Length: 307
Image (cartoon, rainbow, N blue to C red; front, side):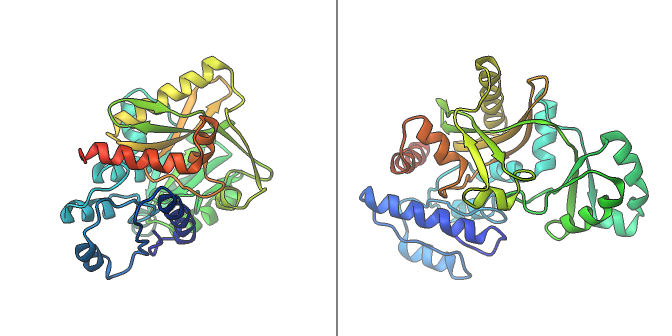
């Protein structure tokens, strides 16, 4: 947990909550705040299992997963490849689209093309195709960090500059009006979709502040959708989980547009486990308290490694 990403504080909150639950379940728990001594510590203690509560860079992009593979230490959640694909919004959206899954139209710009190829001159073309409002977001970042909804051309350069502080690649995505839901999937060979969680921020959109500040967002679980639409959204989430080869757990964020079509925004391989996080909310609606959810994730990880 922890580490040096911009989601460090959220990761620590998730990790501490998970550690308490594991201790209550009777496990011997050693909380590790990621630092340059991580490998030495892991090689010295040789844990039976690593619970990954890292968020953002290094925790969700396949980095720590690949490291644990080298050390032959089993871990929770999807493997390094699934993590890398899920964390890269461009790769995952391209894969989803090529498999017939709806995702909002988008274009990608890089810091190099903007500075060295004059790509700023292409912004009117992008805006013409996507229309306003449009969404600007870093390609590889979580928790809606650096995400801006832009309503007018004059605000686009500033939003792009802001997003470039978080990643050298940015995504310009068509804004889709609708109901924002999250679909959490548990399982390995047999998958269990949990009830959809609908997020309704009291102000603006579902940004970092709305996600992690109690009282700033209202959650409805199950989501306020008709049965047919809800089932369709869950089916799409399962397909995303399978297409990226995920194991144990994933969370697919999507917008149900005004025609009732699920538009996939991204897939998360290390969902938050804080008091306001969507996976625990969905699990509670399915009849699992937090400790039971953690126990389930541990069991799924052990099954993955035949432990």
